[in-house]
Image (tube, rainbow, N blue to C red; front, side):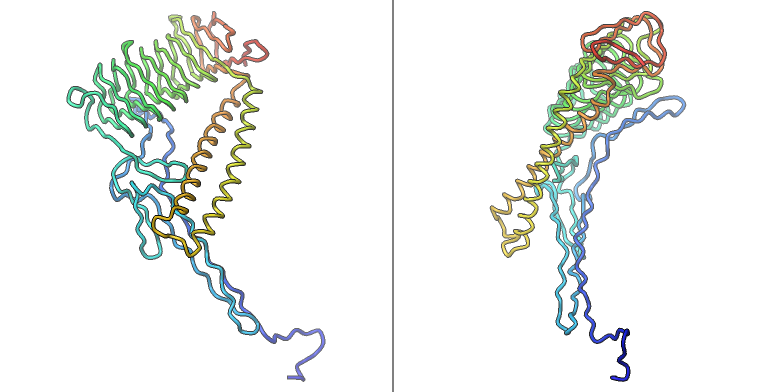
Length: 404
């Protein structure tokens, strides 16, 4: 051995084995499909397709978590064991009244305890009440007032009403006529076949409204109004109105929006009186509010990190999983509350960012043509279209309506 020793030559005397730390648990959850309207043409009929309500049945998969791995122990140069750090077991957040978990072969699965509509409260997945009407809302069903989500496969008969706390979808190909009202107190409304309101129909939503067409109706929402084909002789109030089809049109009626109107065609060759009003906004005030929202989001994220640290320390202690533990419930409720607040602020941030992308402090975009008879108003400044206009965007800046 001594004969093998020489200068400038490395000789292995002892060797350790580093531990391989465990991998954290991996979570995959049910994805809520984004409500994005789409115009589909089959040569005869333009279909207005949208997925608004995410429906599941009892026993349907809602998510899963692959268990963390323990890791592999190492060895020191003296042969002493070096423990590995096991992976973290991230919690699954779900409503225990509507979702159950089942552990099998190293995976924890989440399944629906009831049929209904999937939605999230912060990070917590839930299945809410979902009322599905197989046909029409008429004398057989009576008026509908429901705490949850509502799907109607047919139509709503004239004079009847549908009211719900959450989203409403009316899927009949012929749409609705002179109904009394369709109202979503907290959600959105989707009317696949369109609205022929006969100056009687009232449609309201806390969030967005989607309809193939709107004729002779009163429509109000706090979010975006998406119309597939045309809006004729109707009274509209929304944050913004967007006509989705490249052949779309707004003609007649009174349109009132907070920030933006976007339509291929405004008015008609017959020069029908069409009033388009944009309330507008103060860009500097909105920017200040955006900064406040961003600061609030950062503060809540820091608070969330503290709650997560507290949760990990608690749930990895001997007290973890004690039945009915008040501390465990307190940690969960604080976590859910922060996540819900974050969700609301993120939605406000997105809304403000969308508004700030508007030209000037209020915008009316004509993608193809506007006819005489159209009157536009932005922040109380009025301009009457007295000649055909092609592909023009009007916006207000420094108190004047400008166009590009």
